[in-house]
Image (cartoon, rainbow, N blue to C red; front, top):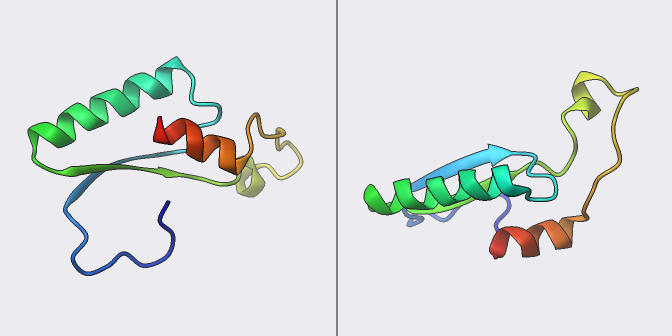
Length: 79
């Protein structure tokens, strides 16, 4: 897991960005398509996952509890 600045020699990368809560089948398909597209374009692939629900900013009175914790999400994404 990377955070902060990327090294200058970090490869060109295709990314998916989102909350990725619980890594359901839709997320799995999106990540699969990302990997395939990245391979076709000879790029690295990666996922940028938000650590808080968007409602933290958009609707602070209506923030659902997380389904999985950060470590579990990291493990699921690594799979």
